Image (cartoon, rainbow, N blue to C red; front, side):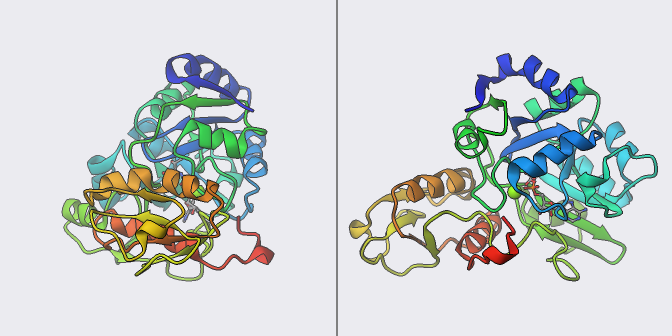
Length: 324
Ligand code: TXA
Ligand code: MG
């Protein structure tokens, strides 16, 4: 069990722990992060241990302002426009590391690029006071459902983290959008809290999707966000013994037969659905249902990030790869 403290009481102890090279779980606007001083190798190693995360999977560096960001990474014109348009906020930029960046190589898994973002709220204030960037992956065991409440963090990682700063349920509910800019293209490596349409509107260019070779966002393994139950997507009906993850005002056939049902958004609002996604999946999983049937969610706006997570939650789990 971790110590769970409301934000106003968590600030000073969180700062002390981070300064001492310890881990703190804290809310960002997207999801809870498992934070450590990004310049301290031992502290960063604790993140990988606590999550059971493969070391080739790099972490996102969180900063409090552009000055800190530019000491770490090299921004071209397009990245400046994106940072100006969306920071602080749910957008992560993959950029070339600047010489003398000070980030521990464990954070970047030895790559010559760094994934960097400026979060909103408590996380940003802590970084400002600490005066150093923090590395923070989502606060869940590797491969499991992402935590959007302090309790979900504690249930999963309570044995390895001393303090969870409790900011209630996170507002956006899915992780940041990860974007990589190269001279010829702008690619979304992971859909998330900023939609492709919003990015296109700010930059005035079309975005493409996916990595160029292999797993470019190494954490984007096929099986991820996995509940114990198996997931059946785009269900047209509910079968015996299934739980139902619903979306919108109308129900699929047999919905009244579901052993449990939760609706991501009765009105069919994408923002509400994203905010509810992980906690609803966790709650349905806790009912012990063997299968969670999921209604169709349109692939528009935040629906892209929601469907990305659901497809990974539904993917066959290859335990030999231990990509959790
Ligand atoms: O909203 C978020 O982004 C949350 C909050 C806590 O900030 N963080 C988060 O971190 O989702 P994590 O570690 O769960 O996911 C980070 C992703 C991984 O898929 C990782 O492989 C990718 O970012 N990544 C990190 N550095 C990279 C790099 N240099 N190039 C490409 N992908 C990178
Ligand atoms: Mg994660």
